[in-house]
Length: 421
Image 1 (cartoon, rainbow, N blue to C red):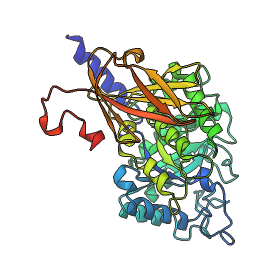
Image 2: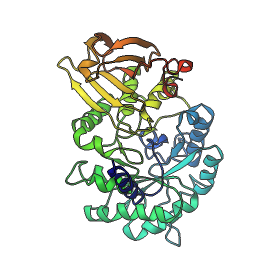
Image 3: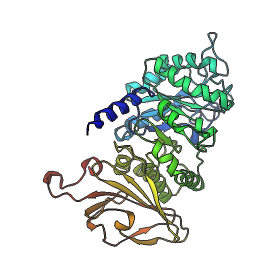
Image 4: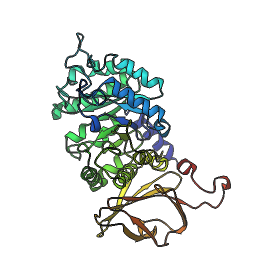
């Protein structure tokens, strides 16, 4: 037992030598421009949808006024194509003067006044992916200071037009530079996505020390095929990726596309459920001004969000891939609870899947299961109780499973109010 304090101190030491900003102890949540609005800079013909301060103010208003902020969606993130094609006379990045006439600092104040945070985009190369000025190694300190002076709260640093050596130097240098500003700025590194996403090309131990989150794989597109491709890659490589995630250091499978054009309602529930199991950042990229009620209900599902935001921060795993094209995913949660997702990869009709908790590695005991998307509770489950779930094609059934309490807390009926409230 004497070893425990030493282990704890070692853990504490390594944690404080890491990206020392104390941020993102749960996966970040918010809204980002890229997937839905891309690099649309045609403000003359498409003023509502072009990359401009008006778009980001609009989305901030929606987050603040439509119940998003209260659910945890508190970041508005500018992606590529925001800047001028030229740095200013002092070598600093500057926003496009036509599309951001008020400047970024004013936009940050607008968000902060509404209890929101501002994210911005940079690229560790000669140019951004969209062809705008990049952050070469000699500009890292300047750009970090500029972002901090504007009141930016989050930086996504992409890797277009940079080579392996520049990435090896640049991503850790930007981490140090952000720390040195004295402003807490969340840091997303696209580094692993440019190195194939897996060891030995990617050093996840280092990434966990210098970044709050990292993009491992391809950009998401507005399609169910894209969601499936990303899901397959992350879970096919779960033995490597799953242990690397935790509070302050997250794998990022990319944005939520729920509410756009490519997903059915069932597929939208599937993305929400899988991202919650993965402890993924919940960063929407959609048009919050025109979102359907179905999309909003999925994205604002309190139980799915609580599972995603579980304070233990353990990423989930795929347990089973059945011959019937049903897959089962599991994530351990605080207070001896867990989440289960039953996903159908079928394309024919709803499938009745028979199993028991014991078959999914649950120990003997009495359980209750709360269905995240129907709101119904299944009581009196023992580990060996056989049950059947009906799963729609490309849909999910998602359960929050918790051990039945012995009425020590009659006031909450043995439930977990932070999920079921």
